[in-house]
Length: 96
Figure 1 (spheres, one colour):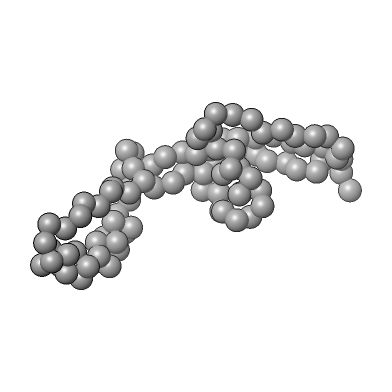
Figure 2 (cartoon, one colour):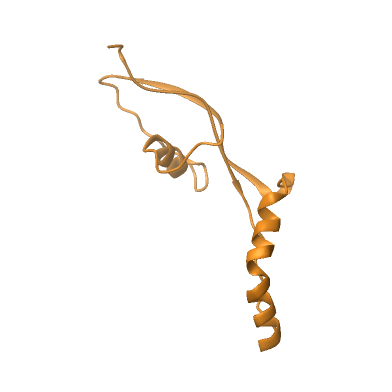
């Protein structure tokens, strides 16, 4: 067995940002919105996302950790630390 415990090459993860829904003004609009929700969801998912809708949490990350080494993940809020850990623990699938 090799000396490398974790090897990550060209790892990327993107999320598709949605638009915040507005509250219906009256009961009729609420019922119409409720009835149309599944179709709106499918319509938004079937079309490719625009460049403004994509958020790259990780982009082309590569590193290796050898047996016995200690790894610390630091960064500001929104840097992708939790996303990286979720991908390594197979909770989330990487985009690339």
